[in-house]
Length: 301
Image 1 (cartoon, rainbow, N blue to C red):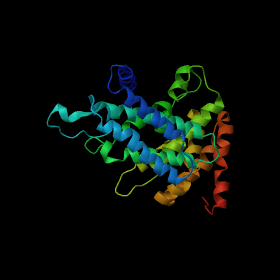
Image 2: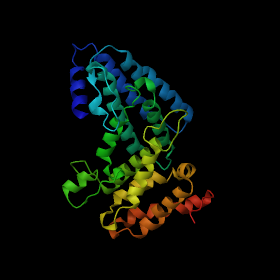
Image 3: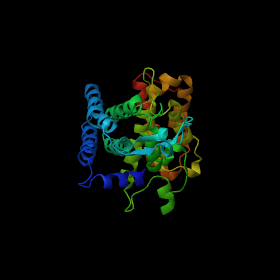
Image 4: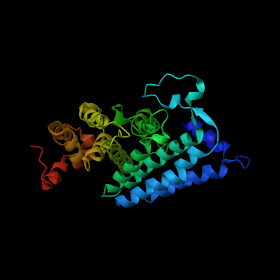
């Protein structure tokens, strides 16, 4: 993805490229629209419309190069093709999706600093809606893998990847990617935002449309953290878990009922209770979540 994105951007920022203006304008429009998202659902609906009109539809309708899309769809069964031409997908549209997922994940990280998680929910709605749009799919397959691949790179703990934070290689494996070294606070914020964003993408349903990320993958992410042995738990696990469940417990209970209640008990009672000393500060906010839920009439007892 990175190799393709850089090569495409370099080629079409040249003055001789007929796509120069369109590529630059659509990319800037995506960044602008995502940066303007707030908690108002009407604004989100308007943003989805403008993103379609001013960016994704432009890339879809603009004549330009194509690319074999199959290497970017690794979790789906590729249908039988009559010829290699059927594997082609607009390179401009693929480039926009790669830029879009980068901006979305960065916005998740940024919005995690706010006590109000509704903006992340709106960003998740926008991303899920565009990924579920049949017009931008290839033979009915959405480009969700482009988003998940980047998520797996920046937030491996969501996918059950384990390691140590005591070596440079281990920290990189667990999503501590900045070469200069982020602070514990910024790393925690990043993990919270990505956890909440993952929930916003997966814990939703559209009429006659599948969510961008299967709802079962949300269950898998929460449970994989709960099943992590105490010796392999790190503060990042609790930061992600906090993001996953703080604003999404009601939806989780709605979709999974009593089973979700059991998982939330493990997440908020059992896991913090066996957290090693290095995780105590990060486990604290997770352990007190049920106190706030009781005020909403939700008890895990």
